[in-house]
Image 1 (tube, rainbow, N blue to C red):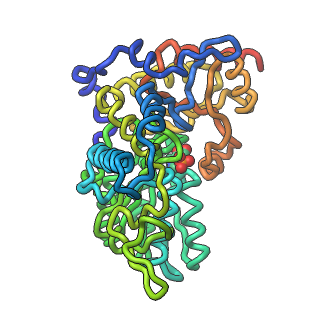
Image 2 (image 1 turned 135 degrees about the vertical axis):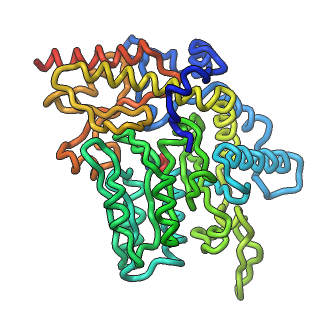
Image 3 (image 1 turned 120 degrees about the vertical axis):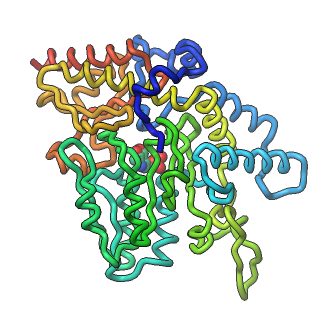
Length: 421
Ligand code: PLP
């Protein structure tokens, strides 16, 4: 994985293909004012803003290319089907999957994980089997596995993390037994920012013949993700977190595994033949795409990925790392402020608490200053439990954020602490 490769090396080499002014002009919402002040949008981990190229394309699709995908021989249906399959190829190339058939369009990362938990669980998980997740997972990568364990009387085991927010790999190796059926782990933590050594985690599981699902919801937007290099068996992400629309996501799975798994939803398009005697499944990827998919979303997602590729994905990562360093340094200089997640390899996410001030109070004051941050548990309650806190403030940074916006955040948090002093 080249995500956040040595930034020193990148510094001299990588250049965005546009200036920051040109980039910001691509995102109409960034010039908005809230409470009479310029919007400072630092909630990109929750959802990213959309460039004009994506917004315009969606509008154009509904105006000029709307028909049900794969369902007709007429002109419009042909156009949409072609664009949809071309979007699949864009996703394949973006994550470097071997085959287009390994890319399944879903409603998002959550839907993708649920699909695997159901299909894989149906086929391979029995009473007394074990599933491994980590303590830093988003609820989306915990609850579907817990539900599976409930159905099958299987057990969920948890890889702990250190005070810095680094996964304890020795503990991970110790958790694997001959009952382990699958490992599901996040590529990057949505709270701590930690980039996990997924390649190493996968290699170890594979030595025991165990497949691994990697949750890429917080990694796909921050650099170059290469599923062939990671060698993971499943990889999931959401369109809305990578500058695409919401309601669209991706499940990547290795062809052999996907072929072996039963479908998780029945309906149109996922079947080869239907009769009351016997129904047979369509081939990949359609076997896992029951019903009318979000084809407009898939085509617009491909446009978002193209946007990032044209901008320069490594340059995006480099810019975000530099903004992360600025935010971390600025916030760390504030008296009494604690940062949660200080791993050596992070995506551009900073979670913090300014002294004893409640995160909601701080978040509301920041909002009045035009600064959008996330407050609360970030759908990762076990992380909060690990630190014995009720929540954090999270600033999640994108390449379109500016140095001035980072400084505005630091200034805003300083103001919050002064008000409470
Ligand atoms: N996994 C991680 C690490 C996330 O941060 C999120 C959302 O924040 C999800 C999964 C779920 O994504 P979605 O709600 O788009 O399905």
